[in-house]
Each structure stands twice: as C-alpha cells, then as structure tokens.
Length: 149
Image (cartoon, rainbow, N blue to C red; front, side):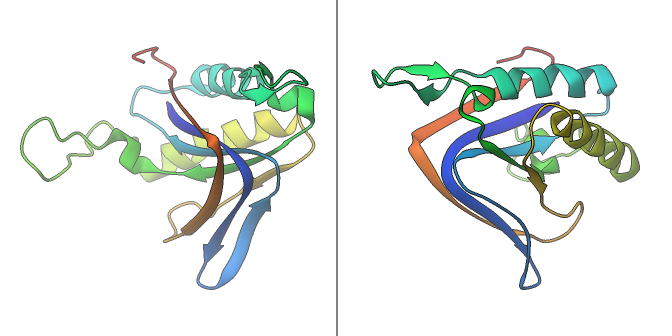
C-alpha cells in the first residue's frame, strides 16, 4: 500500500460538480493499493499517517502529529501510485490491486482511521475526481507499507 501524504491548510474532492470530501487543517492522503496488500498493510499505514510528526509545534519545529493537533484527514484512492514506467512511457498497472480488492482495502484504511480520529473524509472510489489542495509548507511525504521508501 502506498500513500502520498500532504500537509494541507485546505483540501477538497469534487465528483461531477459535487463536493464529496472537504477538510481544513490536516492531511490529504492519496492512497494506492497493490495486489500484495492485506488489512495489516492498511493498519500499518493508518498508524504511520496519523502519527507522522509533520506539524509545527510552538517553536516552529515539525514535532506534532495529526492526532496531536486534532486535524482532519481526506483520503483519496489513486491506483496510479502503482503505475510502473520502468519500461517505456506508458504506465503498466499490473501491480495495482483489482478494483474490488482495492476498494475493500481502501475502505479498511478509512474505517481504521475513523476509529482514531473524528474527521475523516473521502473521495469516491473509481470516480473521476477533481482534487484541490493548499499544500502547507509545502510538506509531502511518501509512504509504502513494504517500506520501499
């Protein structure tokens, strides 16, 4: 499971003109699911995301987590995180989980996060989405449950 985590002051997802998720201060997570992922990967990644110390404390040091600041979370599925372009120019998505499996693990991630923080919003799985954000910093972190980076 892969995540692109962005610290935001505001973010929203729109599908066909309808806002499906919107947050203020918090994290936008673009989440990709691989063919090898399990519920344990979702649990691991939720713990990592919620406890990342990437928010500034009173001394302007990145020392606080989303849990510490009571921030909001916006989770957007993005299978293209498993796009492989090592051979040629057209991405291969053979490593991305099939939609049914990916949706199950995406929902597991959202559910697990919802047990730990109050405000979890989402996009719409398999929909064409417009994602708007104000990246605060900018701060962007890449996570992989297989610890490849």
